[in-house]
Image (cartoon, rainbow over all chains, first blue to last red; front, side, top):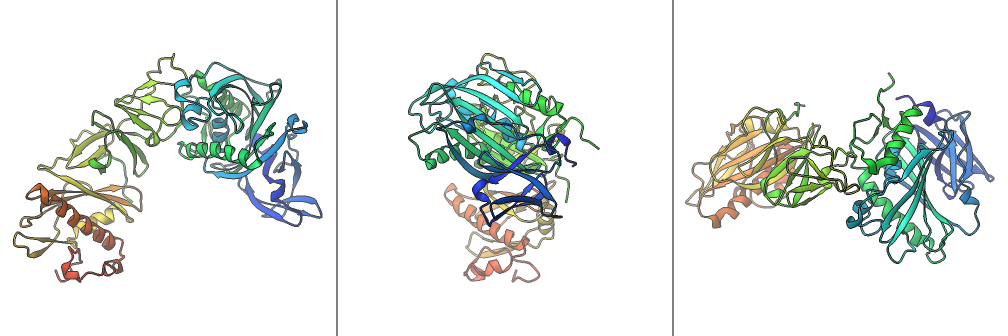
Length: 285
Length: 265
């Protein structure tokens, strides 16, 4: 189907910086188009494979970004990337056979912790999701879910015992999401974990994830393994949801009050006219 | 391919394959089914989808007489009504949350399903049947059916004197995809029932039960015999005849299925 303007107007991560080394190239696919990124004499260039048309390129947040749009909206800011003392661990790209929108919605969801991540991010005996707030920012360019909290037996690679973890979630882009969670070793800071999703096709996603944390004890490998454990548990869910595309028709799935962020996310996508990776109320003819 | 509509009773598994406390998945064309059995030993066949977020319920877990979705723990009673939403235990689950049901029956060691509105009674097969084996055949069901209908399968069976007899299967058709083979002079079994599940346009799952003859102690032999025969049925239908010879046993000694045109039967 035709690509909607909202989806087309964004930047997308298509690999880590180290995936496109000097003298090297990376072939991949974005929104149904084959693209090639290459670096010659330090300069990054990205083009469409079909006709060689150049695409805009930039390097940020440890990743290479591109867009199919001539006049894209600016890539969102993540100020925490400028903070001293944080460690960035990128987990590379995991392909998931589902719409990227399903992956974002899963990421925003607290209620699955006791079942999908049992013993790590939740326990079934404490499955209640307390009420939290979800609202768009002033321009409705982003969604924020705040005052989320959940009991977690092992909230992070650094956690040695259970704790009530506080969360904030940010959706600055239809295919990106970042969570801010209690840092187990610093009271005044949040740890960040995020997904930059590359929609390969409507129902196929390359998920690039990152961890940006204060952590002096764990190796990069430890942090990576923790993230991979969690994400592979989620992938099993994502590849077994029916349909693979996210239904935006109200009433096609059954939310409850614990699903406030999902409800707000779907409403926001509808309002923005997004159809790519979704089952919209009315498919454009 | 034929329309896999579940508008007639269709075999979807062996009873013994779904023990109490377990759930599994079955496909009939576009129908994605979860089959599960609670402590009450009742089998249920439902739409394989949790209405909350679309997760396949076949990955869920059975507790007592309830099925719980593995994504958020939404729990359904034997009638498909939601009884618990763990994230909001204070809320009564909405009555509208109910899983779509299929009509189901268990006869002859086989689980049968049909769309909920079916008016026909489930197929019934008198006698004591034992589920033998389910075997996947990489051919559409109508092709498997035509092999049975053509009488090309030959099932060998020892009589009470130990003589090997071969009969060309002239199965009775009990409706779509169901083949009953009566064996009057075998000392091992009285009848074999083969019921095809049209999984897709290219695959059939054949569920097979046996009505053994004689003492229970001999049933194992009857089941093994039919199980071996089924592997050969698959080989013939999939047209991989070379596979028969790789068994390395003299043909005459095997409970062979052979093509009448080419075989010694």
